[in-house]
Structures are given as C-alpha cells and as structure tokens.
Image (cartoon, rainbow, N blue to C red; front, side):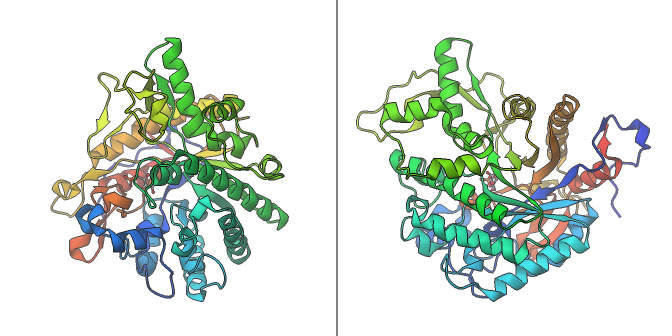
Length: 474
Ligand code: BG6
C-alpha cells in the first residue's frame, strides 16, 4: 500500500490533538449522491435550473449523476475508514425524502439513509447529519421557497421526520449549512436559483431560514432526543483595510450582514442591535410575526459548525454607485485587495490561515466559548490529473500544506482554551460544485469521471491517515 508519511513515534509529534478529536470530512446530497431522478426523488432547484439553463454550468455538467454515492456508498465509506475518519457529515436530500417537499415520505430514501447511517456506524464513523444544504425542493420553490413563510412549516415536518426516522442513531444534527449562501447567491449575486437581485427578499429569506432553524431546534428538544443540535455557518472574518474609523465601520457592517446575521441569533438567541438599526435605517426590515423572536430566543444551538475558507477584506466606500442600481451590501463598503495576499487562483479565494484562529478566538471571547468544530475548510484545484503518478496517486501537496497551516492555527486555538472539537475537510471525494460542476476538485479521494467514477486516494488522504493515527503531525 502506498505510504506517504513514515510512521513516527508519538513523542515526536509536534502538533498534538486530543485523542477524541473529530477527524473527517463534509459533503452534501446534491453534490455527491447522483441518481437525482431515481427511486422516487423529486426535483430540487438545481435539477430544475440545470434542465432549463444547462449552459450556466461548467462544461454543461449538471447534478443528475454527481459522484454516485447513492450506489457506491459502501466503497466510499470503506475509503473513509481507511484514511482515518471517525466522523463524516452528509446532508439528507429534502426532495429525496419528500419528493414534493412535504406530504408523503419516499420509502426508498428511508432505506438509503438508513443504510448509509448503519454502514458508517459499523465502520466506527459517527454520522453528522445536516438538513438543508442549498437544495430547496422545486415544488416549494414554486411558491417562493424561503420567501414564503409556509415553507417553514414544510421544513419543520421534514426536520421532525428526520429526527424520528434516524435520531436513534444520529447524535449530531445541523439545521442548515451556510444559511447566508442561499440568501446572497440566490437573492443578490445570481449564483443560485432563483438568481434575482432583491435585497428585501434576501432579508426575508434570511429571517425565515433562521426562524426555521430555531423551530427545528425546538422540535428536536421536544422529542427528548439524547443528541446535540446545531447549525453550520460560514464565518468570513471581516478585516478593515486600516484603523481608519471609516474602514473599521465598513468591516463592521460586512460582519453584521454576512456573519452575525446568523451567528448571533443561533448562539445568543438575539440579533445584534446594530444590525437591526442598520436595516431599519435602510428601510429593509423583514416581516416578523408575534412570537417569532421569542422562538429564536428560546431555541439556541448546542453545537456550532464553522466553515472557513477565506477572509473578507473591506474598506470604506470609494466606488461610485451606479444610479438606479438595485441595493446591494456593496453600496455600504468596498472590497479590498490586500497587497501580497496569498490566493487560490482556481477558486479566486484568498488563503489566510490565521483567519481560522481569529474567528475561533472570537467564538471563545464573544460567544460563551460554545462547543464548536471546523465543519469545512478546503482547497479546490483545477486539473489535478496532471499531478497523478504511475501508481495512480494524485500528489496534491498544496492541499496537505493548506490543511497543515490551518491546523497549526487550530492547534493554537485549542491551547488557548477554545472549545473546538474537530476538523472536517471539504470534502471526502471530488464532488460536483454547484455552477462550477467538476471544475475544481476538493477531495481526499479522486473521482475519475473518464473512468466511470473510479476512486483513488490522493496523497492528502494518506497524509490525513497518518495525522489521525498519530493524533497530530510535525
Ligand atoms: C461551501 C459549501 O460553501 O463551499 C459547499 O458548503 C461548497 O457546498 C464548498 O461546495 C466549496 O465551494 P465551491 O463553490 O467551490 O464548490
């Protein structure tokens, strides 16, 4: 078997992690299951968008087949086990379980998710299950998706059904993955369906998603289940260009809109007053019904998943706003390109490892040091085939470097008392990435689309195996 890192005695390990640290990776249903219209699954917004506008997707590859986890989950879980996973996050496809978003449960979906959960447990891998990962069932989007309050009721039924069906074995639940993303991509910047530009709708969608999350937490607690429930939020630390008060204010506004709009209500049960004041001043408050804020206040989370990819660098507004252009957050600040920044050129995202430490310290200091873990961190790279050797292994040294440098900062955060319990890479195997489809690859395991989806473990997978077995690295 290919061995990448020579085994080292434990006393030589420089960055040691707790023996019960959660090592693993994250994924989502639409991005890896495939069989998108088989076994009774209903269409979601991605299936529909691809059907109607395939040219929007990289190489016109849609979500129909993705990485075939639906059929190959046993082989994939065996690979997870082999490279050292003790935990794995996946999402349930809402439209697989409820083809119309509500109503009758699809029994094929129940069989599939039971099989996956049981197979993970059999392999000593704890299932972490997320409910909503950008995949609104089409029938519910037809009535407005998260814009429509009645979708919250459909989501409550979906969440309750999942807890009921799988909650005897799943002990870590998450209500949403990155709830700000459908808001910004679907209602401001055009990367997700319905791809409209409407700040008022964006705010309403954000509020309804948050309320839905609180209602799922409420329902879980009422069921007296023994596990934990949380949410997964992408935190992008906002750094001002300078100490100039105008730059600092710009960074604060970005932080309120993109981070604290979900972080504060999820963890503290209340929205930041500055955010409320800002939305009132702009005249973009969402519709809130009596009792909603109490529901949010009384149903905060147990566990916070944090996705960290990149920082957000911000400066005071300098660019002119085009007259008549629809309102966007960028009317309040400008993005700032820090000179000398390190970039992942394939994804166009800055790599700033210390950002992980900064956001963890913020959680410790300002969010009661809530139990948390890094739920996603990763590096998407194009054309990894060029790094494949004769043995068939892709030498993704850049990914090893990426993980190492982030883990060093995570390690420091643990030393300084942050209650951070694990690290999950995005993602286990190469997956379909929304509009980017299979352009950039993120996995520990390569999926060769030219060879019927053949799986091969990359160098990073072997490296990870060694890290887990030594509880750390040098
Ligand atoms: C996260 C999402 O935002 O980033 C994943 O939870 C996504 O669904 C990942 O795939 C990487 O982003 P992308 O757009 O390159 O796939």
